[in-house]
Length: 499
Image 1 (cartoon, rainbow, N blue to C red):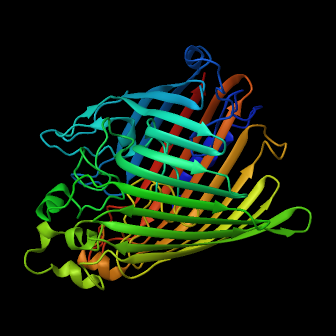
Image 2: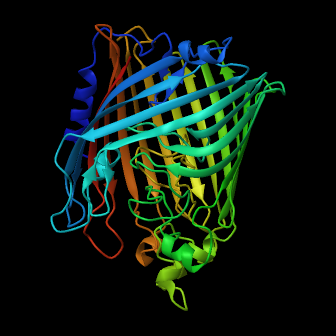
Image 3: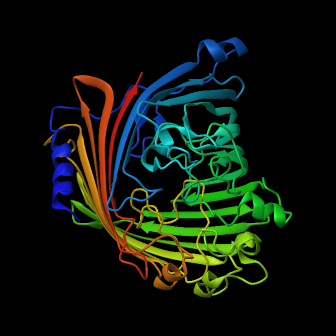
């Protein structure tokens, strides 16, 4: 870890030490993950015409700038930068006899030059990938898409949404940290009739990743066209799925339950099923304990169980695709020896954490252990280890991976020190399986990550938030070599304006 980089990050955070206030408008709040929460939305109206005359428009302008510095550059991995400008306009109608609608247009355009290697279809602009979309020849293009377009029906404590929408759970997420959110074409029903309980069921047909302009398969991997998320299972490629004569566009079933019947205890259950591929079940519990008048301690535990329903036979146990049908022939390649069963997608993760909080200060320590079975399939922008051991831009749900994290967050505005300033930092140690690294069945090596975020709003610049993000990744060289192509420094600067 380089002290100069830490100094740069600290200096950037200190630039924000100016009188400010939280980013809240009369109708919206921007959460820490940059998702918008509508605190004031249209209500019931008396006629079909009033659905539109009493509706509301919500505007947002965004700027995201990125810089990546690699310790060792190569043909496909090079220092790069990107700057995207864009925004969104969301319209919400009033509700007539319980019926309403939402339509949201999102767009982004890149400002800097392309990160494309001349004469190649390789685009190495990883840092700014979600500020543009990439064509099949590697060149970059703007994005303009109606990422949200859904009908909604409300009756009592039941809410139904049908169409393009954001969905948030452990495994799925809107993940609106860049320019365009990750959304799904789905039908979702939510009910709160049972006291202290929220039930939700979803039927999901397709997904649009943040850097895509069209909706695509939830599971089929194909660079630039299908699900090419950083956590995608490359063995579940369109070619492999076609060879297995399975459905390239399987539907997903989602079911979640949240309960707070027991004081201070939050329970969460989740099921995600992708017919013909994989089923995942999650149980989580967090219990808050009061420690005197000021401090609270919240132990939490999450268990994830992944059950193979065909994905293993098609793509193998490894996310990097080394065990897929098109790589194996009649017998599995040498990478198969690094997995207990190279043809199975059965796997699990056990996670635990402790969160201590007092006023503006929050401290967290977390640990996760992935079973030595299969990598966890999660290309839907929800992160299986999120909130426990995942740091920015990291994938640590590879089989037999052990991770631990410490994190601290301090709200200087809440403390009355610097209004509008909040800083969060984490340090993570990720230990990947050396046998899988040596067999090249995983692309990740042991690493240490230091990451810091700083948010700031200014009273003199209303409805605007500035954010600096910095991470330094110290990745160990791959097995059998001293060359390290994985260590890098990442810088991000974001601006959000609501109107």
